[in-house]
Amino acid sequence: GAVVSQHPSRVICKSGTSVKIECRSLDFQATTMFWYRQFPKKSLMLMATSNEGSKATYEQGVEKDKFLINHASLTLSTLTVTSAHPEDSSFYICSATRRLVPETQYFGPGTRLLVL
Amino acid sequence: AQKVTQAQTEISVVEKEDVTLDCVYETRDTTYYLFWYKQPPSGELVFLIRRNSFDEQNEISGRYSWNFQKSTSSFNFTITASQVVDSAVYFCALIMTTDSWGKLQFGAGTQVVVTP
Image 1 (spheres, one colour):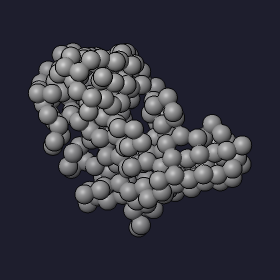
Image 2 (cartoon, chains in turn red, blue; image 1 turned 180 degrees about the vertical axis):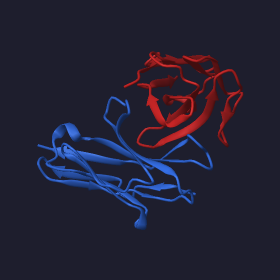
Image 3 (cartoon, one colour; image 1 turned 30 degrees about the horizontal axis):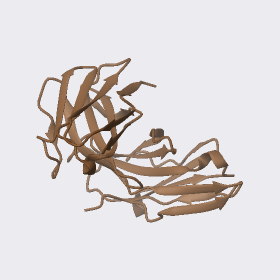
């Protein structure tokens, strides 16, 4: 199956700093990438949909100025958590799909963010 | 409104017992996709199955089997002869096609604990 990577896998940062998480599709062109957030013992919640070359579409309740998403190429999307606070600590997972096949999503391994 | 309901929060079984995970979904679309994912403690989502709404055939893959019943809007998952390695959180998910196309809607997840 297709491979999606995320970097870093784990990050610890101080409150007030910004953190960038990368999501890469390694062997296919991902026209759409999704970003999910998962709190401990909870389900995955979609944060935003990112289409290559256009602005991301955020789900209701997700602060677009807090969570900056960029999808500059067909193989890379980035999520930047700006001015991170302890409540932003979470597990962030991306998925990638090919054009016209959104029912097939390939998930990255996730990034654990801990904000102190 | 909850689109995917997994009523079982946690199921504990002894190795070699069978375990069935329930999933009830809600959609008005005639075309939709249902999924099961496994999330072991590492956090990485493991794809198990995808089923489209026009294919009600039950499926068996090794010790895994799925029962899709549109009449009751259910897509249940059974692990036969469970093993310790089956311990994980299992998510049922739905993609609708008319609204939120491509967006995976996850259930709350069911924690399966298999003890030796």
